[in-house]
Image (cartoon, rainbow, N blue to C red; front, side, top):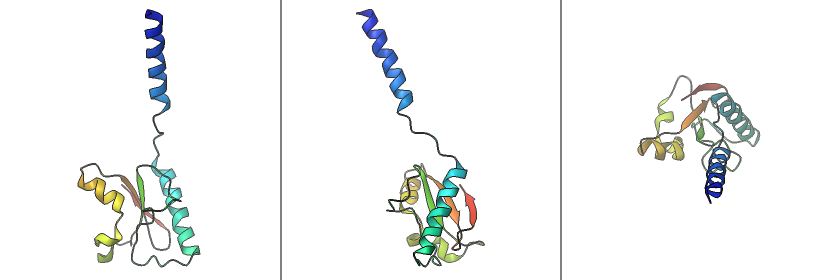
Length: 113
């Protein structure tokens, strides 16, 4: 019986380590955001209003990150609620904001946070 408990404990420890999602670093999130932005431009999408590209986008699979278009230097339009990522905004309201990547309307990297 003792062996069974030890085996169950070892299995539990092993599975808990295997099911933890990998931590995504900023460089990977940045690369994916730039790709998403470039694809939006190829599709003819107007990014001048600084939209969030990751909201409700099945192409965005970078967990705990959002991809947002903004201007550099920042413009008033970038601060409008409708141009910010809903997923980031909701997590910010709960006190645990997600990470973000900002790119320009021409898909140039601005910053991560």
